[in-house]
Length: 543
Image (cartoon, rainbow, N blue to C red; front, top):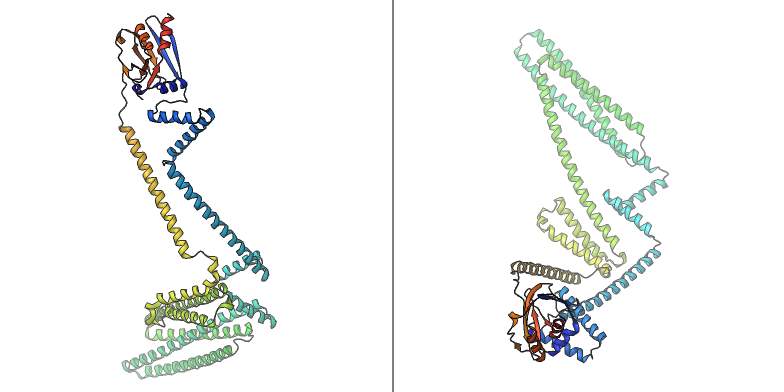
């Protein structure tokens, strides 16, 4: 504030808020120390200062009201600086947040009421079916355990019926399961033995044909009658042995067929393990005997013709074909497993439908439609309907819609509508984007402010000076200022110490008679302060 704009009212206000103390006068110069109370700042525009004086006069200069008003204005200004918004914007945001708070409280109350209703319904349901939370947890654990093993609750119900039937018949379920497992192993062993018998029979026939062929070649090559007679005798003996072997193989085959028929007749009845083990031992002994006969024949033929290498090659080929057959069996087994998994998925979907819907509220037509769709999908998965393979996603979607249409009427009140959820999600996303934009804008403003601070030139220290003004604010020329005394003045605002001249004594008396005043302007901060002429004259007279 320039000192030329001062007036009596302003001077009076300055005198109220400032105390000036003058130091003792030295020989050639004296020192003036201006002390300002730290709470009051005078860097206020003139129009605002006049408005403040007018307001203070309207309040009757009551200190409490004035202090309360100033504190409120300072708090409001501090709030605006911290928020970076005007008071009107803050008030608008406050009203908006207040309305949102009311809405949120209403929504929370509704959710709490809904939760209470759900808890009451749950307690009523538990009481109606005589359930407890611990029992429900156990059932859930049981369902999880069944699901991990690829089973469902329907399988558990079937197993319970079977176990109950066993108990009614005075059977031990564990023993029956162990016996069935052993019978299954025995049946597989019998099938393996049958296959081995067939292979042995085929090999014997092949060896017999090779023997006949080789004997014919020998008979053509060798013309010696004695050797031919011996070969014929050996041939007849071999034929007899082969016939005997074939007879034994046929007997074993017939015996196996009888055992197989008897086993098929006894499948569902009690069969002793001793009989099955005895049959297996007999079959194994027959197989071992036939193998021994086959080896003996092979050795005789090898001794006669030296064709052991060919037999080994044939055996290797047989082993290779057998490995290929095992790989095919594994492939078939894996496909059967995949089909079993699909059938399990069908059972799981049906079980889910029974668990999550009210059986009394489901129509038979709905269930038939759903089952038909699931069976179609199952056939497509199996490859039975390869023509419908492109329609698989569409059929799966139809099954999904059917399940939703069955379950939705019973769970509608338990979930938030998708439209409302989408609106809330969009609103949260919009607010998040707005927050990110505001944070980015704030950071950019901070960066710009820091850049301005760095670019702002450092203030240069100007020379301090003293001026004189009349009562109405007109400047008065100080004619003998350079002839006056040099004094040291300390600025109360920036604490800068400056040495300057003051007018002589006669000029000060002339200024005091004309009701003028002296104004000191600091060269560092640029602020102006009044220096009372009466105090200067009093110090001067005290010399």
